Length: 181
Image 1 (cartoon, rainbow, N blue to C red):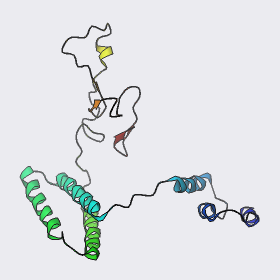
Image 2: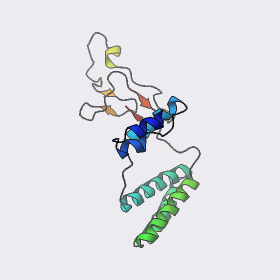
Image 3: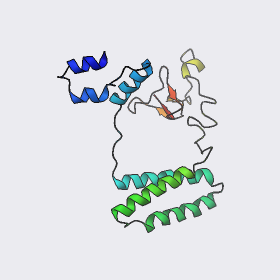
Image 4: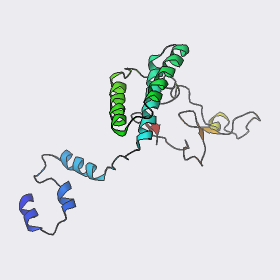
């Protein structure tokens, strides 16, 4: 039926033909995955210098997970910076090859339990003792002079309306993405 219907509708654009499957899907999951692929945004193609900067930043974070002592971290970070500086003026082809090798090395050396800031999602103190709302502490409204008059988000950052990160109402914490929505 789907193939016969496609033959009848010759005025359909190539765009819809490219996203619609030619055969009937086995289950609804296939239909949703095709719709998700169609709706998903393509990743932004970053310039080479931003890719290198991200690789360097991720390498430092990985090094922080592996280095126990701060002195060891400083020595290794200096050696890592020297590696990046040594290849600063490479040709575009060599730079692309070095970037791919660096990403492969970063993936190969990933830490099984990376360091996370303790009060962020995934950290050991995340939402351990969240401060109660001030209305609960002082139901009559008589706040002491030294009482904090600000709200704190679950990640212990200040909840301000201008930043868009307010903890009023319910807050969804996405543990996979490590952020609040």
